[in-house]
Length: 170
Ligand SMILES: [Zn+2]
Ligand SMILES: [Zn+2]
Image (cartoon, rainbow, N blue to C red; front, side, top):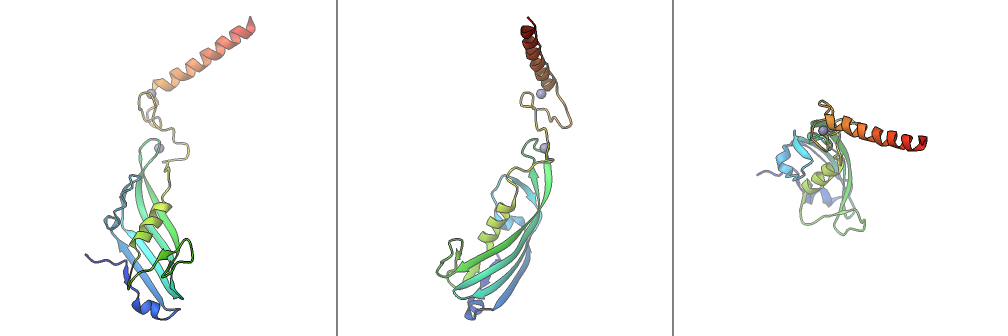
């Protein structure tokens, strides 16, 4: 299996200031996201600019993809475009707490790209901001299929109010 995100860094790290671009589209299966928020995703577009600095490599760019997720409330499928900026540093001897460790002659960018993409996904995707979700009693999709439970509960609420009014009136 080819590994388009594994870069030989021997040449790159020889001299600070050396640049390298990594621009690829990869099938989502390559990332093994294992995240149940993701239902399906088209290819992931990776565009990274690597710059060799003293003791490491700075990686900047963007990771983007169109993802299908499920609405957190009603489980409808939603298509989301995710584009996450990348600004990371790899260091031989990390002095930056956020740095990735650079080892050997190969740099595998895939774990970082996977993490970046996952961080960029919404935690609680909604099909629309005011999605009413599913009825907790009968499971009806309240957006397209208003059920009777809701009306009943409103009635109950009113009847409590009526009772209170009645008591106050006494
Ligand atoms: Zn929804
Ligand atoms: Zn219901």
